[in-house]
Length: 320
Image (cartoon, rainbow, N blue to C red; front, side, top):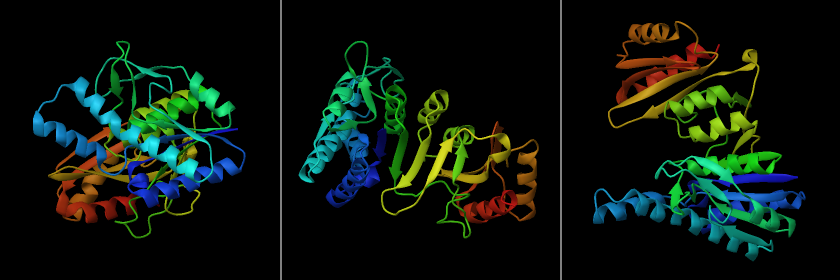
């Protein structure tokens, strides 16, 4: 049985975190699973690479920026393979193109067009753990491309679909999706399951829990995604297709420099929800700066200083 595991940058930020992530990989291997591990760049490496380029040229060529940014994931892949080998497991690292990931020509946000996983399959058949640099591929012109911020999620889902993986597990610094951010709302509940449509709506609203393209790809190919924490034991949350009646309600938050957007997602986002939320906040003295409604997601914008009361009010209203 093949498992694909993906580790985000916070899970790889230093050697001890890398070792912990490798331990999770080894536990899966001990259960006699074939294993592909997809890795992001560690910590803030991608931001540091972009900043270095912009110190030279405020608008660096996109082709060169892609070539530069892709090195962050390649470092992580090599280090993970070295760590796994030091812990007694045969492992081999692959760049995106070595793994057979081919994309369109759009630098900075290239779509995956084709996967030819022959080298990965050969490594798995030899009993090796295949460690793949996420976020990258090769264009028809032979240039390095990147898939957009969060694109390692898409790499993991695409490989799961191409190779028929039994599971796609994505590890971050949170242990799943809650009805609201538990750091902000007392009583927020961990959701065991979320529908693809609701996760996609949340991602398109600006949430960074999962890359929007990864959710779209998972929905199109029937790849269930389990969201887990690298730092605590938990069953996490599974993103999959759910009947309409089983779709939970939850609230998401995205921020920019001036304001915050609070989104009601899932069964909470029905007809008339936007006006109801605006009325609710207005009665509580929370000014609404704007709003939008799409299928499965209703959002209101409030000032940064009003985030906590707005989130608590909306969470209380939708979690009944």
